[in-house]
Amino acid sequence: MFANVQIKIINQLKSNTMKFDRNIYNIILVHASRTWERLRLEQPHQEMPLDNIESAEALPSVADFVIGTDLVQEFLKSRDGNVWDKFGDGCSDTYIEKVSREYIVKNYL
Image (cartoon, rainbow, N blue to C red; front, side, top):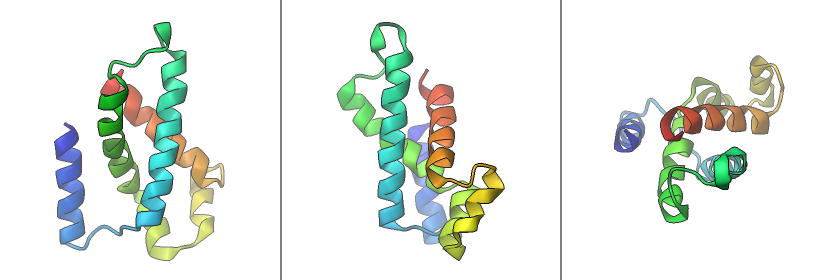
């Protein structure tokens, strides 16, 4: 599953259908990591199915998924901060953490 996300992202980048920005990706990765940790604290015994080393390998898959979402792609193309208003909260952090949470819950819990 994780390899499929990364392969899809690489193929989209190669075909030029996806925008990529290393700084934005790093921000997404930080938010995904924070979301992972919040979810970990909510689990029985405060443990995730993956240990710390494995989670470090899984987090880029979460960030890959988030950066490929339509809303983030629209922002990367337009650089218009009003894009986040379409989400209803007007805040990129909230959107990134919501999508990260949904992805982590679906794929890791």
